[in-house]
Image 1: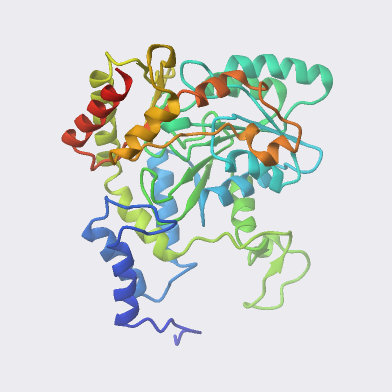
Image 2: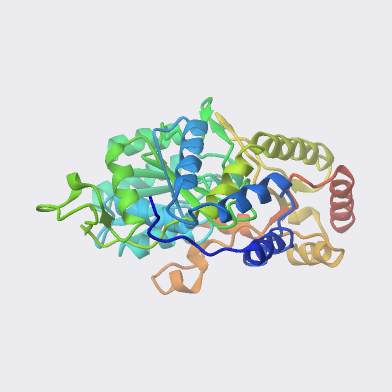
Length: 411
């Protein structure tokens, strides 16, 4: 068969893409250090194929992730924010509904509810794990039921790569009738209750991110995993303009093999085959990436044991992927301020960061009525937290340097 159309990619185009993959900035200036020749070859193979987007590599990526996570369905999209958005829509979230999440997260975990016209509220964090506190959630749900303000969706964030108390959250969801979406953007390769995060045993849907700084990357990309066929079908439709070519989903007669219908308002949230090829190639080394992160986390725990810092604690049943390694300064034992320690580390070339500014303190959410003091545990955490370097190619010598400089600044 003569194809309808075929891309006119030539060698110069391929060389331009390879040059970016070999550079320091793949997207938003994010530095990639774990690309191998196999990743580049996978992308080049797509450039030389008949499909750049909406092709077979996307389905292979989805199938590989579903199998890895022991989930029935996986739907790949252009980024994790898009994944959260359509997951909320698939859950039926809309105007007049509430979405609850943690204040200790990236903005997208809350913004996805606003995209649907819903109201947002937050659940304070556990003082030990820094994840959404399931017992605070239980108390808040009891009050919300009394006041008629129960959430329709809870976005439970696997902060730093470690799931929340998902078993307890699932019990509460069954009792109060809300849908759980696990935002596992940090947790590709993690496990909970002896099963891979993404199996969706304790959540209706699980969202992964493949941004360049995540566990594996597709340059930009996200995915929703679920065990429900009805949700998967709607997610697939929502990522593609609300459009279907399946006669079973259409209204009225079909007109021919060219025919499609838009049956609801959707979005252009599709991932490309180029991105899927990169993500699929990276998956072959996922175990190695996570293993090294766990080695580094164990090493940090040993090296930092005698410094005036609070180390991350393990959530029961959770085995973290260690996307982040966050410490909290014991500021009462340190002569320098939180900011001085942070800036001191940056001044000697150590790329620390702070995950996260509590979402409710952002100007947009303040305008919605939130204020300082609303979620005190998250605010205390923010006043003390520093994210130390954590990536698979971090050497033992580099890690020693990080710890030594932190020791110098906190003595």
